Amino acid sequence: MESFVHLLSGFSTALTLENLVYCLLGVTAGMLVGILPGLGPTSGTAILLPITFGMDPISAIIMLSGIYYGAMYGGTITSVLINTPGEAASVITCLDGHPLAKQGRAGTALGVAGIGSFIGGTVSIIGLAFLGPVIARMALKFGPPEFFALMVLGLTLVIGLIGKSLLTGMMAAVLGLTLSMIGMDTMSGVVRFSFGEPQLMNGFDFVTVAMGLFGLSEILTNAEIHTKAQKAPKVQGLLPRREEWRPTLMSIGRGTGLGFLVGLLPGSNSVIPAIMSYSLEKKLAKDPARFGKGAIEGVAGPETANNSYCGGALIPLFTLGIPSSPTIAVILGAFIMHGLTPGPTLFQNNPDFVWAVIASMFIGNFILLIMNVPMAGLWAKIATIPFKLLFPIILMISILGAYSVNNSLWDVGVMLAFGIIGYFMKKVDIPMAPLVLTFVLGKLMEDALMQSLIIFNGNFFSFFQRPISGTILAISILILMISFIAGLKKKKEFLANDVEM
Image (cartoon, rainbow, N blue to C red; front, side, top):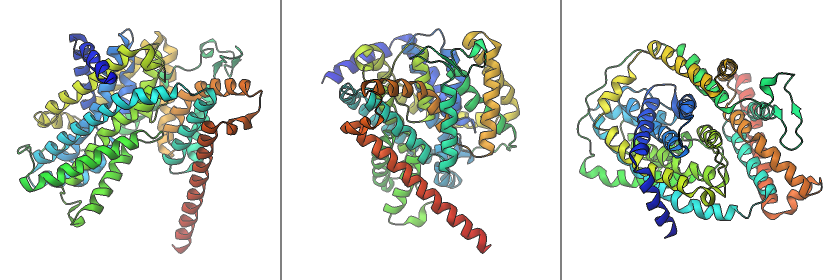
């Protein structure tokens, strides 16, 4: 009941003209980011982050959140109409969405995806509204040891689950931690790794690092790809047939629950629930052979799951201050940039902000439902714009955004340097998620570790004497061991296949 009252007050703030405009701008930008191949929510959010400088924190996070979940909708349109996924999670939608379009049922595929996305997104936001305060109250009992253990668990999951190799994941994580240590130590006041450069006394700015790693590297990668524009089919008949309603709604229900639960796990991303949902629907289907040829459940389940994931992924950020994915890490950077500290005290210290942002997500999902299907033909035409025309525009926006951080060419240089680093990381298949998450959490982890060691008089093993921190660290060690063993098995299989050849 208390959450419901707070949510109503949040709607009163979110429904002001200013915040409605920013919500509309956010979801529209998110649709564009999702439609344009190669950008995705992380790159789009990072590139547009500097625009929020000088904005009210509520309006800024409303707009950035709109970009985040709006991108999930946008990627669907091009996946169905021209078989070109706008963002990673929409790759799964291509499997059955485009075959449906070839059968003249593009409208049905988009209609089902739109309805599923709206239901999944809305239910997950309800989960955020009612579970968030409960988890935040529980987290208030956590001390520095528990928070350090939670951050270790999050990074362990990222390293173990995202990278194809445990070694490359560890390399990226160590690089991120090293970068986070550059500048003045908050505990001792000692300046580290600055090499006498005054610009490095405060370390690297997260905004410029994120813009380089995700925005510029994507631009450089996509500049190599030559894509031919395809003509989008007509969109008509938005609803499924009568006999298809029941399996569609069942798929939407399963996708909603699955996406929300995966979103709660640190180290996950929207691709994971989409793949899991598709596999689940195929296993439960009476005729699995239909999948890949235009099964309506193959669109409804994954699209619902990746939108439901968004609300679930925001719970660890709002309640614990821990980003569960690279895009959430960028949004965490926006929180810090606007003087907000996500975590257990956020609901207590900034209730107006929290509930206005949550309320805006309900509004944004409704706007996206209206924008998604009736305007599908227009969005598809945007996707056919040659990348060589978009390349200089996006690059110019990125450079101006980096310069606006501190009105300094140093930041432009930092963005360009990290853009090149990100480009080569993609080339050699080193995951960037561990790097950016350790970079964001590095200082928080270091502070929590130092505070804990002061409490424990320097005895690290005391972490395992506290029930919560000990259990979490034990789980982290177990995950690393499983990842290491799985990596060894893959290496043996690869060597065995190589010998046979």
